[in-house]
Image 1 (cartoon, rainbow, N blue to C red):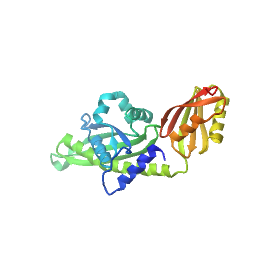
Image 2 (cartoon, helix red, strand yellow; image 1 turned 45 degrees about the vertical axis):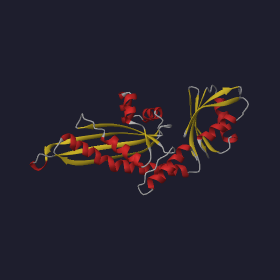
Image 3 (cartoon, rainbow, N blue to C red; image 1 turned 90 degrees about the vertical axis):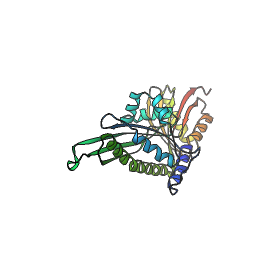
Image 4 (cartoon, rainbow, N blue to C red; image 1 turned 60 degrees about the horizontal axis):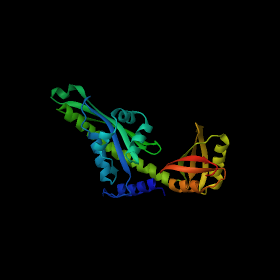
Length: 277
């Protein structure tokens, strides 16, 4: 069982254990980036605080919010929060997170007062995505909207965001852990393998043959593309990425050697070295 999946299996057990907290070195590490706007301009970081508290209660480690704010460029962060999962994944990897939760939280007030009183209705909409940092896979997404009546604009919007976020993060984490468990129960695991310094098409064919015939535990190999000297494979493998990296390193096809340069739970980056040196 891979380290990433093992951490989540333990986390699922903690998550299901009658509300008891669980913590330890095996806990998955989360990072949170939320673009929050209350009444157009104000941000009390309500959604971020609710999500952090929920994950921490279940035993997860969460990257410190202040550390993120002081070290992440705002434009890059906004891009990651609103559009590109690869940008979000890259930021998450920068801080050593396994999962990054990104999203938006917006609260707006109605123009009219409620029943001729001094109170108004405030509606908050919160959307979240959980992204696996090493592959940029969007694991789960969810949204929620809640209305709250209050006499104060800022307080009303803040409470609406909190009310929308609490059930949303509970649903999101439940779906997230269910998906991870299903992936773990599958017969084989899909590991993305990127091999650079591939100069000729016969080398791509040789790599595919090596993976299928000479690496024990490989059930299937799918070539995704070959662009600018990089061969991209999906390897369906009975084991974790570290074990696959070791098998590739020890393989001796004779005419070249595979040098693994980076290992994450669901992805390997390697380099082809000609001559088997």
